Amino acid sequence: MATISKISLLEQPEQHVLSIRTTIHFDHYPNTAKQAYEKIMAYAEGNGLLFSSGPFVCYHNADLENLDVEMGFPIAKPISGDDDIVGYTIPVQKVVSGIFLGAYEDTDPLMIQIIQWIEAHGYEQQGTIFNYYMNDDQRDASQLLTQIVVPIKSVNGDGSC
Image (tube, rainbow, N blue to C red; front, side, top):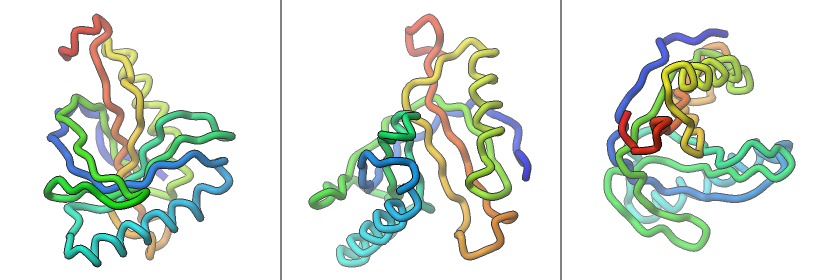
């Protein structure tokens, strides 16, 4: 549908997460994500943990045949995880972000705008792309909110922005 926020440069605070990372063919993403989120939710419930916000997916590459993808949830404090559920901390980082209203599969135009913004403002993408799902998928696809977050670094490589 539409981008509903301006594209912004932000400093994202340190974030503790529980996640599952795997490599899949993109066609298997919906089922893999559903299983991962369910497994993490069961782990959190079994350990008396609450999430600090909704789920995210982190794309570590763009190879649709061998997609390196991570599904998880932010949590309020560090925890180690168990088996394939990993707990770790994402450090403070500078990011470029925007919010999209509409179906998850329609977010590509915002992603393209963010990449263009990064290049136009003298930054480089630093690895991963995060999609944070801001409301649940139990509603019409036209009402879904996705925040796209792309970590960046300055072109001169000194880490300053």
